[in-house]
Image 1 (cartoon, rainbow, N blue to C red):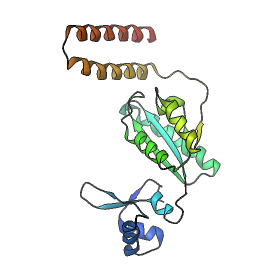
Image 2 (image 1 turned 120 degrees about the vertical axis):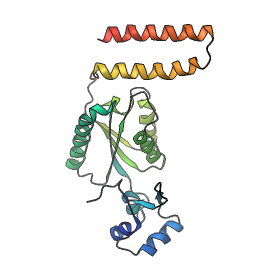
Image 3 (image 1 turned 180 degrees about the vertical axis):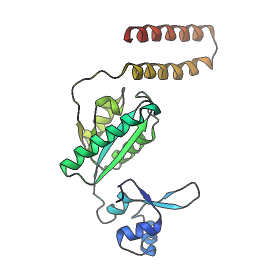
Image 4 (image 1 turned 30 degrees about the horizontal axis):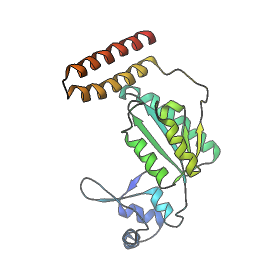
Length: 211
């Protein structure tokens, strides 16, 4: 069984829709169906897009999970399992799973970009996350506002405020420091060097208070 976000070669796409390969090509040329190109230049068609050919207004349930580092992949798998089980229990079968590995203060994540892209196209009926901070530690309210504008329901399974693991808090602080330090280091003025030192001292106090 294919997932909605699976990318299929043209032959499989034709089988999914029960049409000929020529029909798939014709749909693409007419703009009814989008194709994504692989690094080798081969066309791939998303299952979700294939379903939308006959129903352009079709919207999906998005299950989004995130962890901060690769050594927490097991936690990410548990998040996704919980989200999919919840959606399945509700009968929301037309769903897309998006996931990221990266800091909660990093906006440049593939899954997050895909979510924003789907919201922009008004393709999200509902967004399900386990905790508010799984989306973003800073700035999640902006995405929730975009959901509200699009009539997208946001479901947070664990609504109670929970403390994140200390290690992830430290990683987020270090991520912020890395970005700003790189910018300041590019201009090695005495003032900037003092600012860098002040940031590191503040970070050490925060980390020390949290441990």
